[in-house]
Length: 262
Image 1 (cartoon, rainbow, N blue to C red):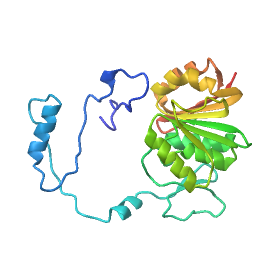
Image 2: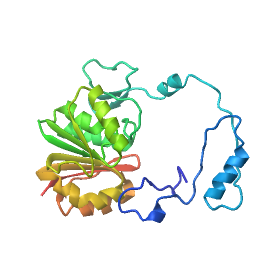
Image 3: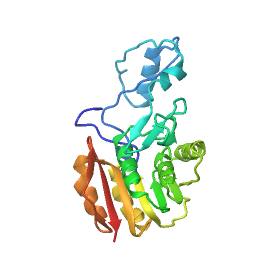
Image 4: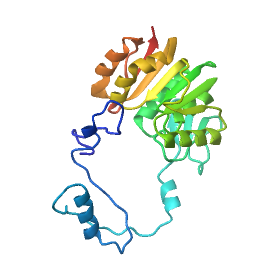
């Protein structure tokens, strides 16, 4: 259903029922040795899934290439907001006085190309103008935490439920020569921050609303993304219990919601 109205975001977020951990329709792509018996492989996979008849499949050859160069050619520097550039390590910064985040595609979400990441970074550029504390909940690659630190935040903490995200965030922070602490969600010290940013799925944002409200200081600011345009009102109403909400900001089919803690 990718690219259609039936497409659903699905990443095992909190609150999901077990039957919601799979799409109704899926396409499987497997890379194998050329000598692999594809028919036997598909038949075995179908059997493991309880499918009696082997599903149809197609084959195509993948020519050997310089995979490093192929990968690098897909990622150019990304300009965000007024002065932020996300630059892969194999590129030079396009502007000498830019605020540069050196970031290579890796194990976790967040390279600056997705509208939700861009929305959050533009918001941070407009609101981190003092030595504030910042919590990045669902830190992914650490891109938002690193951006906040480079914009002037004094104390920055990133939290995620994925151990690979913690590894990726710590590595990227070191590459960018910034100090930030990253924790698994079950282990981070719950210390309220001046600014809380959460770029995760709306279903998780709705479940986590009380926790994220507690994580934000009185009169502190919150920014939420990972929200589809049609989910704006539902998520905004939930957070209005704790925050005076601002007007939503849209980019493509995504929205950023922000507010000030009551």
